[in-house]
Image (cartoon, rainbow, N blue to C red; front, side, top):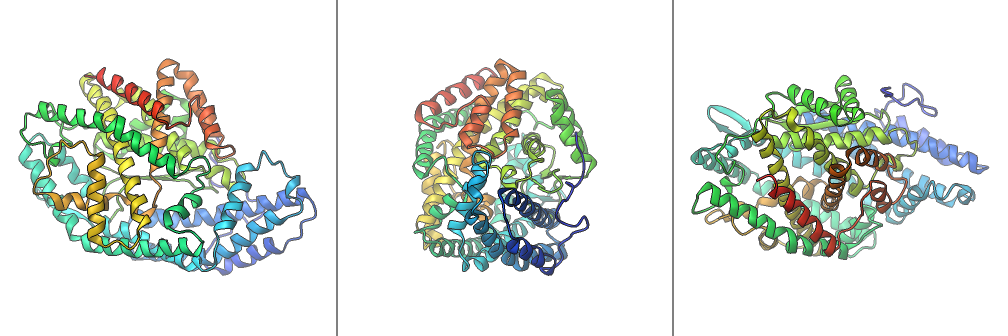
Length: 570
């Protein structure tokens, strides 16, 4: 495997770095003013533009990564904010002018139209959406979005003589002592309530800014604007609503059956929210590893025996220290794999505390990482910047493919069975949650002038449509209405969520193929990911040996398949 840290720069100086706008302005001007006399010169110019964009993207990436790893370091926050307030706003108009220079070139029709199809399509979309007046608004949105991590990253509770992050506290929600679970649940919710007003204020500011961006671009609401910005060329809002309806029809009943069975096994008259994570057999929580180092070691071993290339990817990241896995105070919540377009080796960030869900997060982000490695040699950034429906296919398929070798984490057969069962139950629950969050966001941005109380009411109504109805929230209604505050996508990356649902369906199909013929399914998986975004989403799925399909009939067949597999683990 090629493990070079940087691609060989052909246009930028080897020591090029970005400290101020002055480091960039002359380069953008040269690209904008360069005379192009042939399709060959146009193609060379395109590669130079992409080399610059990759360097700019990676500079921003490292600023974001560092501040999310340490939200309490003001210098790191300032560094990130400087870029989004001082650099990005100045880059935006140049990017628009460069896009227009490409599309207006008399030599554009001489390019290989099939090769550059997705690139040119996205470039035209970006030109259509660009508005000078939105530059400052986008800068404000980026700055305010980062405040979500700053607020939630400070959330801790004190329990059992220790200060715990909410991720660490979640361990106690799996404790077999119901009294302990209730105590910790209450502490977590009490701590979250402290930031209720701050998060509502932040969200209102974000909604106002986003709505104005949409209006400036000629859209009636931010939802319609965001659909185009996200490049959803292969489906529309009606398809999303069909997905919502099919989830309610086929997966909510499965979710209800899971909860009813859990309630029965736990032998409780009232199934409360602090009962939803504990093992129904009152077994201790699954504990697949002790430390972040052990998690990484076992993940590499799991990947190696699944496919040698997968293991090599994680090993390279380990060697380059492109991982921050353990939960700690002051670290932003959540997890991500950040692609680094210039160096080609991504960065994995997460908050591991020793739970089974951490294993899933690790292999999930590992799937993204493998995807980044498989596409790193493309010179056009758009080919590496895959749509989420493809990106999440990579990660969610890896969760299921790797499951066969989770015996590396669990030597006990009963524990391994529990982990697999938990994974499939979580998929069913997650599909319901995804549909709920997407349906909520669509309604939110259709009426951006709603009050906080109206948003709470809307959330509760939407949540009740997709919830099993078995959980008893009597006396805890305030916790329900604030539940959406914990979904970082709503604050940081609006509308980027239903892609997980579409990709989950695809991943289940990949897994079905894998169980039938593992070597062939893995090769198809790698072939599909290697395409990056050089073809349409349906064509990527076709290369993986599956369909990009969320029709009623398909959803029904997937639900039947998952339930059959889950039933086989009982």
